[in-house]
Length: 557
Image 1: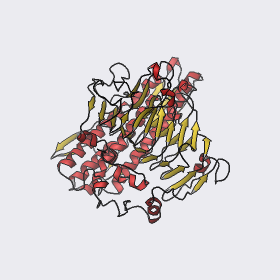
Image 2: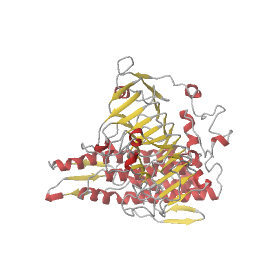
Image 3: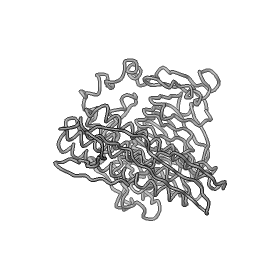
Image 4: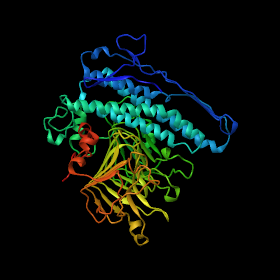
């Protein structure tokens, strides 16, 4: 693991790590390689030979006499070192044992996840280096978002392997990178604290509803950078935009499948690309790739335009790959669409929708499954007016997500099972992630209502990872929720490090008198709850207006 020497002087971190032979503060930020060889059962299974070849040279010279800018730039110099061990160059699998096929598949997932991490870190570095630091107030939020996602990718890679030597070796190999990510998050936290203390102009989060003269908005409430055509598209929020293509199952559109429509999407397209999905049940697994950014997909209704599939863990598919629908491209918007996984509770993990896209939103959509229905994987996400149905951990992941004005339906599980609404996966205390349910209704599905007499226990959440964070506020909680409210994962795991909180909830299941007495559980006050509203938690005022989605930025009461 790389070592760093840093000094704190005059309220700023100054990195002293500069390789020799580089002038003017230039720094080659990607210099790392490692080799891990796995030989289970006396036979060579494979070799993982990652090497980082992409070299980025950044100059500190332009930040002379600008200590704050230099400080933030120093943070970015640390971040790309997370690429250590992420670039898989070669891998060979010489073992014919079918039991190893799952390990091979998990390794393929790792390659994809680590590539995502590389690209996102490189993008953050390039934006900072080449577009300047004039938008100083947004930098810590964007860095936190990026680094939190990188940590999630690393953990998802590890989680994909079955228990055994290969999983242990992979976790050990990625440990230095996880530590670097954690250290970088700590530095960004110091930056944010410093900027707040010295009152840097423009620093701090703002709510658009309270600032009609906000410089990022025009008089019509839309961002200044939005083109005239797209401004016209979003002025009428209740009207669907003119589609670029139409998908119709029975041949009355441009394509009969959503997959075909996406495959023919122009590689270079300015503005939003709009796909209209006509009423019908589309049996296909759909992926909005990372290159497919600024996509809008809308249907005729969440119970009319439905994408359905049945991939599941029991049949040999890793949870990461079971999703019927996956959104990876940033700035994705879905409206009036249904997403289903029909595998059933006996098939265990079976994702209906997996969302990795930053600044993504879902309006009036429906997510139906059982275990692991909605995988809020990474980045900033917003859900409004949706229905989410499931049984075990059916809202899970490590995104920063606010689910607002939605209906959460708890379904009938298998015999001897319990229901858990959320399973949040935060692995570091400085990650800016968490699941927030605001102004939602947590109710029993009709299937559960019919068996209430069997006393099936249901809970608001349990800690999937050590620093799991979930907030339920201003919501209606039905009597299906057990008085404890929350359920442990395994013994006392994470009970002292998690952050679970409730604020101003109503309903027969909202009484907190008998809630768990864990160190990490609390009933919040109004000031604390405000920090987890759309404005501060998602920086929603900077991106949600462009999507034309109705939103409440603060608390309702």
